[in-house]
Amino acid sequence: MKPNLSLPASVEERLSGWARIQEARLKAPAPFKPGPSITLSRQFGCEGFPLAMLLRDRLGAAVGEPWSVFDKSLLEQVAQDEGISMRLLNRLGDPARALEAFGFHPYGAVTHDEAFAKVAETLVRVAAHGHAIVIGRGGAVLCRSLENCFHFRLEAGFEWRVASIMRRAGVDRAEAEHRVKVNTKLRERFIQDCLDADVNDPRHYDAVFNNERHSIAEIAAAIAAYVAQGVRT
Image (cartoon, rainbow, N blue to C red):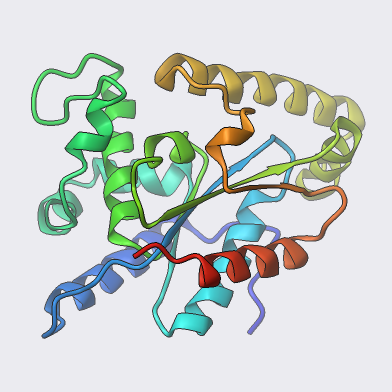
């Protein structure tokens, strides 16, 4: 059945699905070998979530292993769910080295905003474990030292992104323009303030795609081919 690419699945459903996948891996008789993970950065108005869902299905079918999509809502839910943290996250590896480079101290005093530090720790853990597609939250910067991670970004012109928001959110042009302008600045400021990085710097990414000139199906095919031929683990 073709997934609905217009609306994200419920956070609760995806959280339960991810937990089931991790439980199965932890019960496997042979040691689990981490696979590749992907981070997706995007300008506001680009089709990041639909692309992630296409990649999840395409990559899962190619390798015979389920992949999980982590956006802001799911990352925050996993980070806040102490049951999952105790049962699963503590066994996904130690991300301390990657986080210390950004001033985070998950096992001691936290020098940055505690909520983001916890999300950042969760993000690095799930990415390091493999078969994760992380959308936003500075994933490319946070995971740049992880050898199993590939980093991609979606960009498009302002007019295209406004039209995309009008179509997908069902709002008028004035509202769409407002959302694009405000959220673009908020995302850039968020990464700058939290990670002291420029989200627009192409050096953070393995490839940058023009969402205006290429469909998400074309971009998904290109990313899948790139990952398949460049697996670092």
